[in-house]
Image 1 (tube, one colour):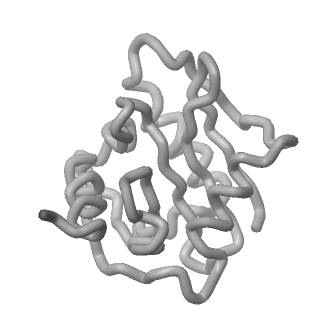
Image 2: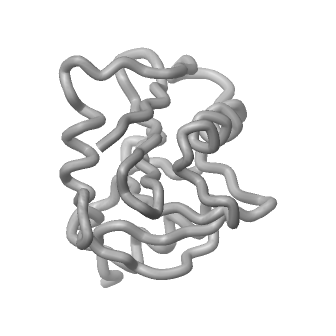
Image 3: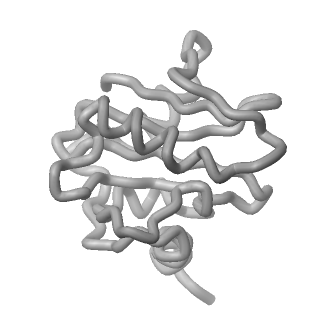
Length: 142
């Protein structure tokens, strides 16, 4: 049976991102802290797309906001977590954008796009979450 790390790596690689290394949860903020922040009651999206329909715009919409927020480094690297069993224990995975990357392929077991990207220095996140009838792009300072 594959480990949580293997399952997370498989999902990340299927999205066209390169896996550099597992960073873990230290130094923080942890994956759990980031998910709690994204799920906060007063959180509002910086952009949204309909949950049903064409998802090709999710990648570019997220990428534009992630670049604006300084989440993606000049070399295309950032920290990532996605929804798979045990991913919070794995912690953050350092990834790199490629020409074939498409974050709309970071889908959970319910077929929904759910992930958080964190800046390498840890103070900013930009992720995508499924909320009611829309995908929300959420950017926050931690």
